[in-house]
Length: 305
Image 1 (cartoon, rainbow, N blue to C red):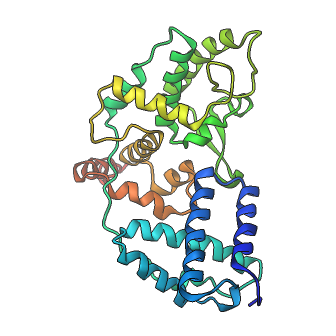
Image 2 (image 1 turned 180 degrees about the vertical axis):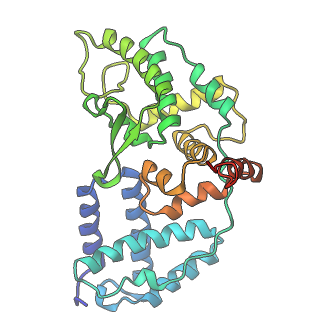
Image 3 (image 1 turned 90 degrees about the vertical axis):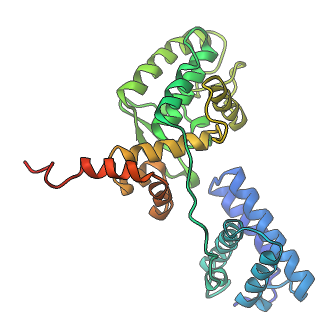
């Protein structure tokens, strides 16, 4: 282990690294906050500021401290995940031999049932907007694309016209990882109508780089997309216990694909998940009656040819 290296300086180095890898602002903020609080705890409780004095015991002490505050297991595990990302980088760079965070057990989480939209709600959300104006057509297309591709909010904002292919959309995910998502015939029809309005709106007035843009011709922000989905949910009278957000559209897409018979591995690839275990959470949230319907579709006897 490298001696005398200040942990704060190493954290600043790592934050630069993940910025270069184009991680989302949300991830950057989470890593910075969680690791920063941990370093302050080390200095306050153990007078530790350098890497050579650190061990997994100190991480265990920090987790125990967080437990004493009554934090939920999911929140504590998110802290561990951010610490692990930092120490994984330190190991890769040769500063340490082992990832200390991986030597600490994760907290047992309660099974989380992910609630999402129903098919009828999604249909109403899309139809909440018309094709009468550019913004109405844009909003309709945004909701349709989120629900029919499962892409992230930030990924949608970054789609450029050149990324739209004949039957698929090129998506740049976390860390600039590329993947394609298919364009279904239904989505293609909505996109075509939107593009007609878009062409009239951009003529001699706005840039033509991004597929979706604001009223003033600027690249969409994640806040704008969040507002569009929230508005569509209000207009469609979506149940009050369902959060109308782009991420809920992503939940809907994953569960709908699984209910319709697509395998977990394929859904994981389409969502851009690094680990299939993340996708399995959606499968666990599918109701028993839907599982029975899925089983009928894949019945051995029904599929004998």
